[in-house]
Amino acid sequence: MKPAVADPFPRQIELRPGRRRSIELSLEGGRFVARIPASSAGPRLDAALERLRGQLWDRLQRESVYTDAALAELATQVVRSHLNDLALPPWSVRFSRRQHKRWGSCSFDGQRGTIRISAHLVGHPRWVIADVLLHELIHLLVHDHGSSFQRLVQRSPDHDRGRGYLEALETVERVGPRISATLPLEEDAALQAGLFSAGSPD
Ligand SMILES: [Zn+2]
Image (cartoon, rainbow, N blue to C red):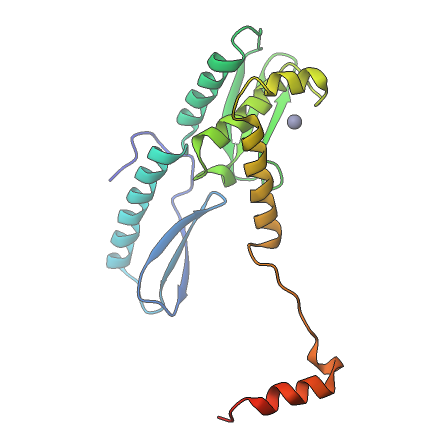
């Protein structure tokens, strides 16, 4: 199954063989990663990956935004809904697979604005991507995050929860979903002896 619109993501798939019985394909930060059984290779694997890729695109098309064309359409909707009374300069928008630290960026050469949205957002809900687009579209006119910027982002009823969503996402990406603490055992010989004497010998 082919996506209706050409996608901006590379076709090559990074293979990660391991001890598993299924093939899992995921899109991670704009790259395809396939976790496959260690012994699989050849045309059957290629066909399976192509099928999974089609399924993934279909799902992303329904739930999120993944093509530059769909991203531009969403940005146009954002302008229509929230910024229609403002005279925005001409702009274009596309996904960036090189943008790892920021969700979006906006550059302006005095004539045209170029908005780039991090490919890490692909797969996240449309309304979250719309909120990042709103932020960058406002930067076409307002370059800082001062009070007039804040008034404009608040025009979207989704803005506060969009910010909360992205903050949570940043925390999970930085520290992971687990909270853990480590005890260096060698610093406590008595505790170490107690822990290991309780285990059964192999
Ligand atoms: Zn900003």
